[in-house]
Image (cartoon, rainbow, N blue to C red; front, side, top):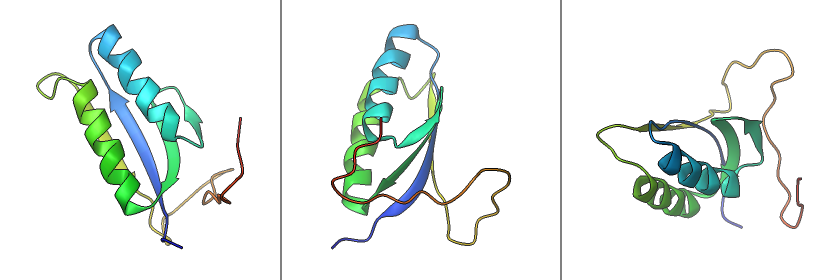
Length: 92
């Protein structure tokens, strides 16, 4: 089984139409999050697909997206914890 990595996706998109498209793409990969900051667990090959889809949804001169890998030794506070994902589980 391919190793999966925990990521945080944050986006700031200026145009409403582009923001809706970006949100639709980002939420299709997300396991949780709020508004424009989402969490996901993906293998590297799916991250490449996500990158391409997000890049197609924005204007790189006006918008920005950050995809940050959450390292195993990352500091987490409050209710924050590393996301676990079992294949076949659907979170709604």
